[in-house]
Amino acid sequence: MYNSNHNPASETTRLNPGKPMTINLTSYTVCHPQELYLDNLVIQYHNKFTSKESQACFLIENLDGGSWWSYVTHEFAEILTHLKQLSIESNITYRPFPEQTKLTLQTNLKKYFLDACDIDTTLPKEKQRPIIILLWDVNRLLWHRMRRQWEDLLSTTRTRLIVFVDDLHFTSKLMFNSRQFIFQSVATEILATYPYLFQNYYTDISPSKIIWVPHAASTLTNRTINETAENVLFVSGASMRDWYPCRAHGFDVCRKRKDLASCLNHPGYGPTMMKSNSYYYGGERYFSYMRKYVFGLGTCVSVHYAIAKLFEIPANGLVLVTTDDMVPILKSLHLNQDEHFLTINCSSISSLKNEIIRIQNMSKENLTQIRQKSQEIVYQRHLTKHRAELIHVRLLSQALLATPAPAEGNIQWEQWGRNCR
Image (cartoon, rainbow, N blue to C red; front, side):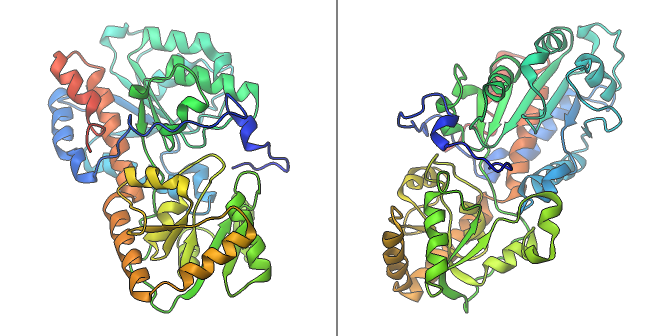
């Protein structure tokens, strides 16, 4: 969550510290991949843009995965590379941000994006092709300090900006101001892993502007059940007690009761992850390692984030063990308590020990059914390729919305990929 030695308390990183967080699940749905009707939308896109010369210009930050390959599970890097493959299959060109020109506070945004699209900067707005930008690293710059640049870009070009955001919390006023500006004043659409919490962190952002793009499991996971797995709880990640109190209790249990839990510390990012003592981290190595165990802990009870572990653990054939706050969120994603995952009381080390013993004594047949059913749902709905398909749908929809069309067409494209149950 943070790479610094000092991590602020979770309560201090939102709008109203000390007040209970609100969760809004009624405004968001995540469609089954079959409900995206991707082929139909691609046909509509090509009917509107009949030649490559007339097609919208799509600019995708980190299109080849970028620095996201240095993260433990490669999730975001996979999504972005799947997205690139989808563009090829759809006969649509997705371009990366220009590598030769670094984006800084001094950058002329209009020239930067028009040049990236090979659009003549002297062309009037009505003769330009639409530009659809996917900004993946919302923290790249202090965007509010480029207000005039953004205003000029949006007023003189046919640009639509889609912003992706993962963790919603902010660690400084500058970070809040930058994000609030880009979300409220620049973004046409926001892709968020935790949209149901948005109102706790930012103001005046309509849910209609936000698309729920949950975390996902890698397509590199092994779709089998390890029948000889150890009957203990696998605990992994950063052990920050304020942010992950349940996980911290898990690490405490690991130190004293090897018969109950096995732990894996977070290796850090970038080159750190490649050290020999963290050989089991990164992509397939990490997934292979966790498959040694029957149970896997996935929870972020301090802020109710539906973190990637909620999908990675069942995808690899483990029983997902989480906390009660995740029940309604997972239900919205078609994962049900006691059918696809188990919940525990993790309020103390003692409680966690007792809960692990309880689930260890459940019948093997029951646990196997949970492992199989949850793995099936994740493979149907919650892989990185599914998230790429949703993002692809929203990018094409925004390109179509950037062109003149009857009102019914606009309504259809606005809802494509989000109007389902």
